[in-house]
Amino acid sequence: MNQDRIKPMLFSTIKHYDLKQFGTDVVSGIIVAIIALPLSIALALASGVGPEEGLYTAIVAGFIISFLGGSRVQIAGPTAAFATIVAGIIAKNGMEGMMLATIIAGIILVLMGLFRLGGLIKFIPYTITTGFTAGIAVTIVIGQIKDFLGLTYPQGTATIETMDKIRAIGVNITTLNPYALLVGAVSLAILIIWPRISDKIPGSLIAVIAGILLVKFTGLKVNTIGDLYTIRSGLPSLHMPQFSMGAISAALPDGFTIAILAAIESLLSCVVADSMINSHHRSNMELIAQGCGNIGSALFGGIPATGAIARTAANIKNGGRTPVAGIIHSVTLILVLLVLMPYAALIPMPTIAAILFIVAYNMCQWRTFVHLCKTAPKSDIIVLVLTFVLTVVFDLVIAIEIGMLIAVLLFMKRMSEESGVVGWKYFDPEDDPDGMNLKPIPPQVRVYEIYGPMFFGSSGQIDTMNFRDETRAIIIRMRGVPALDATAMHSLENFYERCAKRDIQLVFSHVNEQPMNTMRKDGFVDKVGEDNFRPHIDDAIAWATELVKKK
Image (cartoon, rainbow, N blue to C red; front, side):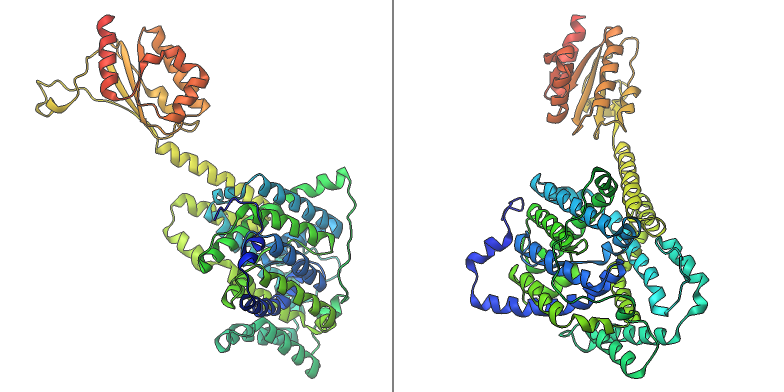
């Protein structure tokens, strides 16, 4: 199956669809909707919007991404990775700014898919994705401590940045509500213990029901969703944000961040799903679907969406094998939105915080983090820890930018250490009994062997080549050079000029395809002479020897 194919997976799977698979997809879709219900509400609240916005996202984006997606089983909706980012955008630019950023992100994702850039995601180092994922998990936990403990902040308290939230918690810890802590602890205990009892009904749903009953029938003074938000149970309506050059310019950086994160999260989810069902997703089609889904979500009042690994895995475990399951999941959530949404007002905020604690724990990959710190090279550990710290202290944008910059610099350093120039040693056969098998080379000929990629980070190695007074020809053996960039080409030209002034002829041996093409485009081959490029070292030595004799 062609992974670059621009065709929705639904259109391919529907050809061999039958009633039995439809029944399985319906059951799986309903179960996933039950799982998605409390998660969508919790993640919406963590993102700084109302509970219904989370369902709008799961319904609209979930439907579009399943319908157009490049995966058989991907389930999309609001995810924890976006929570802190969306909350920050809304705090700075309001709901209109968030909508505009999400639409821009959707357009970027569509363009990435159309230009077949799905494969480029693999160039983002694993240490960076692990670092910022763990960082996001920590920021989610910090952001939910207030509701879990029932803290009260004075009006005007700054709680946008993670460090502001930590300071606010420390200053207002004396306002702790023991009833909120009790409800949160009970909810958290249920979330931890319930999966050991049953995996048929999601623990988050049991925790929500238990939290509602505990507050409702004991009269505990604990904030609920209804105390803080106005619940609307109607279908989402179309709303166009105000477009202007100033607004677009302000929203562009946030849109780019959302697009990159959505692409990474979605394609990672697809890869995990592929390994579970032994299939292959269409990465470029998935990016287009993610783009359309995010645009649709923003236009109908939702927040950014991406592929959700946990919900996708639940879909697979319950028998979902086609995008129909994802569509059923969205349709089920529409019925929930219309019928059950008023009851969401009864959900205690500490229960929401407990659900998000578990979400953060599941996404943090702490075992992987610790394993990398123990086993990875020092350069990778630096990138991992730096990305993690920057995500927590500042934000994801700075973390990815600086993480990628450091990763690239360390990679170039590592590659430059794998490149070099070595001069052949000369032995007199009469003095060296082991020299009988060495190649006979006239004293007027020197041989240098270049190995590794020659780029701007390692081009200085070329300047280390030198010659003696009697040298009349220099052979440069390049069989170990897979690539040559403009900076290294410039260094070779400088070396050629030095040799030309001393009447020394350059001869090249075994130049690979990419370096040869670079030399031809540069005009270097014509300058040195086509005849002075030889296929093998023996041929090059014979040719250089002949040139020396003529001189």
